[in-house]
Image (cartoon, rainbow, N blue to C red; front, side):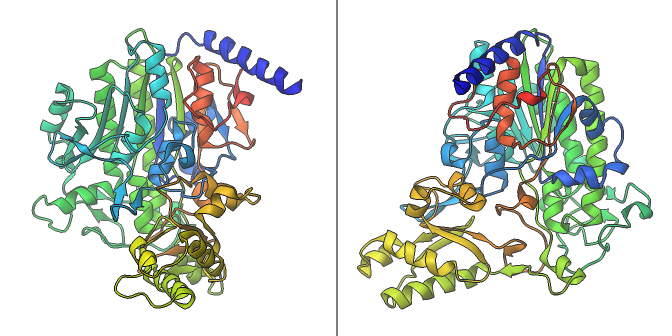
Length: 545
């Protein structure tokens, strides 16, 4: 009886809320790639009034929002945000997975049936995604009058926010913004004009220096430490000159240098402004949606880590970028006519060497993939014999281990599942591994621990490995002692901002258990849009007026 009453109240709330928000002209979904929630708290005293703090003051801030899947990486994170589903439903289990039948890696948004528009190369599309997204349901509700535009520095971020039937999807490829023939046969004139302006190239030679006084960074790591990465001529220390490896002319390395600086976010902000003006988003008598995913914070975080001066500086500069974009939207659409969401696709783990430097006995480190592969092969060889020719293991990636089918057939191993169970049991004793399961175990296990539940949500039959594992906290794969990573089922990788602001939302600080998987159903209920197919998230009704 209570369940039925709750369902009835939810339905009534959905329709009364929808009718209470006729002024919503534009849904603005902002993703700051690799933005840990604690950045907002840790760097809060250095943030202005009109960026992050505008949303914190006028929106519902869910301080306890975490992804509930195991593979906390860019593709899966963006696929969750506006679908309300995890990889076990939508199929996006990782940035890349291994196709055991073709014996090759598959990129999450690759599509060999289409090609790029605006540049040469293989196209991108959501064909590997299963289900629908908020944008699809918005378009269907309005008879395709609503526009859904998704943009990012990264292709997978733009594609996996847009849904399957958007108006336009664009991402950066070197000096230009491109799309794919899945979406269109030619770039809109406004995109061509932006590309022809060579705005992307205008940052060549710019210097990224600290935006705050040195005293503001006193709680951050030293500026020059050996475990930070040196990429594309930028060096480890401020100031960073944005030229790439050749300081005399633009080369492909310049574009990586640009992407690894806050100037890459500046470029995307200007492109987003052009999209609003050219497409008249929020200005056409129908609710439109704009999705913007800023990637430079992720690339900076990988190179320098979450405790670096570079990361703090990038977040402070991102705050100013948001403030400028909000001021622009206020003039064009009116902030009171917008519904905003700000979140992230994942967080980031501390650099193991940073932790070791500060506390040498801490349990943190790196495990080379080759070492893990040798261990797995050794376990299977001891159990089933020495294989002739090929190895037991075909590929390891994204915490998935894929068997070489031909080796198992030649060695007459009774079943792959038997071997997978044997390997999973042994891996659980291998020190850097926290947990390991065969594919059959994942499918059948009741999932009683948080890690088990997260692994089940990241498992998709036919894409996930024969064995799936999680590393111990503060451990990561890799053999080079530089840079930071993410992808594990722990809070430093999973805890991200979730702020919703706009008509029908009660501003405040909400410590309730929440997740980015709740964004799509919450916006659906707020705006009277059908839920995305297969949605797993809940409606965050506690923040509704």
